[in-house]
Image (tube, rainbow, N blue to C red):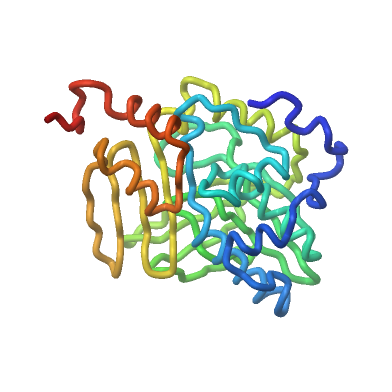
Length: 289
């Protein structure tokens, strides 16, 4: 973590005025992010963000300090990089506030991939405009949704061969679920209680530094476009196109090109350090002459 992540932001503000909307628009490929009716504009923004900016935990894996100041996050995500859920949704929430949406940052317990209680380390967005309300989340990664979900009990949305559903549990709890292979799977549980910046500074510090954080163990990369899903977990590279999935292994010689598929470019020293961490001498996947 960088020191003073939120020291220069008033306690009640998320600092959306420090995000340059023109820089963001170029990054996600939209000429005018403010065009259109509120519901359609939100859908286009959500799709554009998910398709342009990858989920990327490489800083956590490499022990590189990561801050959450809005301008800092924009600098990182507007370059040839991606970020974790806090970075993605912090930036997206600031953009939406620029455009007149009311945004609450909410904390969620991830349910996918394990059992038992988990900390509320995931950030999602409760977004409102007039009478409409949505759950937005541009930073969940491989099982995330491409478009916002209407935030009311029983709402469903069909996206890229998957169906997502919002359910109200016993008050005040909600869940978002995904339907695949005839089974509903909970992605995460959440409440609509608004969080303050410091709540996510603490969660982010855990994810970035704690030895049991899943985001520190191995590379997790993901990018969803309307026709392709790219995913790296550890040394496995998965590409899904037209319902067909292909899997192969990352190698030292393919690493730079594989990262480029996600739009990620690292400085030479960072790339070399990552390669040494992923492919120590005589490890599996190490190429020998």
